[in-house]
Image (cartoon, rainbow, N blue to C red; front, side):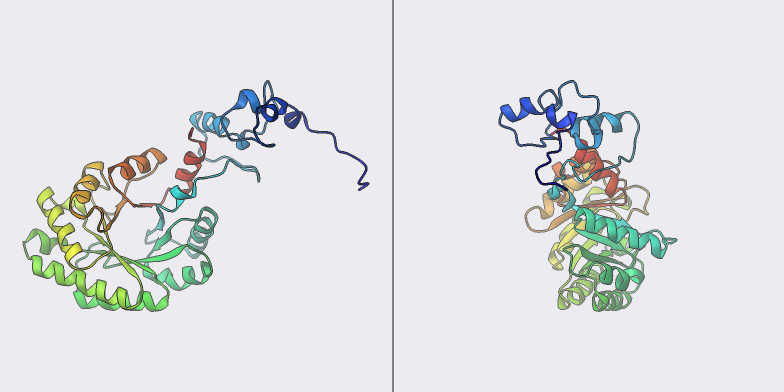
Length: 295
């Protein structure tokens, strides 16, 4: 190309003269100032403007094609999310896609059944995305020794986080020593390998005093997080449960809300109630909604 040949500005960028005069940088798409960025423009690619993207999603789209000028996503939102695939019929290709999406959006972790740990550890090597394996999942009604062994093997294969299910029946029976020791066995095994533990209390099967007991036992056992649900129980996370858990462990442990969180609005409600981590399979949709949400 002849360096002396100048390419004329596109109509869209030429329309940005008012924005430039107002002190905004070139290419000020996505700032929700359409009157300045592209006044009267009918050629502006909608995926480069947060406001127009929101309009498209409101009209019914659940996916939006994106160019390299896609409105930047707040990575603080992505860092809350454990990108989750725990279906028993999940295929290798689906797990690979899960890891690719986690890398793209910089999610906190991928949360998978332990059989997929070696694959995920390989695919995510060198990235900040953690590998999270579930233990005693989804019922929690397995031997403590089995949970300990499952934890040790998952960590050995590359898991950096463990989401374990408590023995719900023991808690409901009032056998608090058993529940504490069950959690402690997993915590000790995980921590020896440098992994953290999130304790799933399956809140939908407990009354409020039992939920408080489960959180207190998790804290006493040295766990790092408490988590609302497996996603396989009668219902998932609720704002009430997250706020209740916050009363017991807030400031000392993380709180993971999981189960039924399918929108950015859901995530915002859980975070406002005290959740510091979100488990979701609809993570990509949540991020698309977050990107389109007016700042």
